[in-house]
Image 1 (cartoon, rainbow, N blue to C red):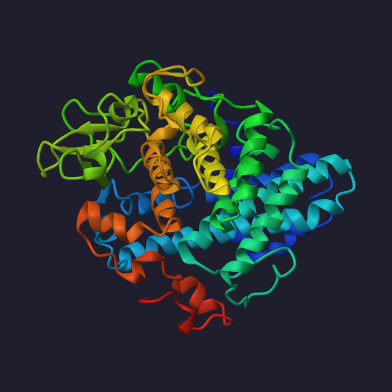
Image 2 (cartoon, helix red, strand yellow):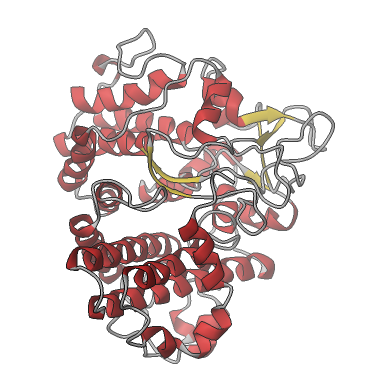
Length: 479
């Protein structure tokens, strides 16, 4: 219960009434609703519900992405994900629900952005903070959408009453993301108003990653460096593999490396639903059992096979269990909660300080067109911690600049380190796509040729049927 926060409870309460809100959107815009700080906060809380639900950013979303990563495979009804030929109807429906939930959260953000400034019983500082939080969340969602669907309809406070919105270009979506994130950076507080809410540092981290996708290396480096120099965050130190539970464990409330997480609790309706585990024999890492929708193999998967067994992350994340495919098959246990009943208490890490350090390592090197001492140090901090060594102290496992004669060789190492560090955090596939190596990696590791259609998710029928500004020809290729 120590992880149940009032704003999340209220968020779920509000989203449970989604049918009412959809039928009567103007009721939320009434002059009486947004007058006080408490009322505005309730409206902001409603943004979180759809995006952090089972079908939002932190459960169904990673389940769809983890079978695409080079280190993982999907099974059961998710098997088509890992065949890379395009989604079947079941998985098309799943990504369609993600789309619908994202737009529900965007709609709730638009209501806040439009109406909170009209409040009569709030300070200007309170209004600025609430609007900035809504813009941060809207930017986060559009960033997830543009990477997985390409251009999408841009629904903002300016057109939220318009039903028929055309598909925007990728450049226009990124322009909106940057606009929102930059305004969020200015308006968000230095410290979170509540644990789990974004700060200006979370906005800077988002901006650093967005600039990477825009290949604006100087800006990405600058934002990452601002977070590093802000001294707000540090890596959680470990000495044995189980110490990583101090980062991912179900009882953890907050850590020194948490920049922005989605918060969960074991309470019914508030838990993280895991697709990673199997309840069999001695293995009970998730109380309700799990469906082990993803797996890997320690001998046939080259990415996993090359992973040094002395790296403590490997023992923490993977465990060997025969799921009918042989004794070298492995399941993922990063989010383990044996005491879970309907959902786990583990929080879902959207941005950790480890992410930020690896953003900096890549951006700093690319901006200089060569590996730099600062980029190397950011990489080494993450690498040292992986071996149970103090992250800020030079060590025997450190990489040296001489190890990387070219920029490409350094970036390859950063990408490898990020793959191990963020395994099962729904980040790997989009990284591979950004780098232009997704098809190459899947061919190398899995010996599968990725169909072009599988590089994006299809626009769902819910949009095609009811948005008259989008035609069948606007659908992503192959669907």
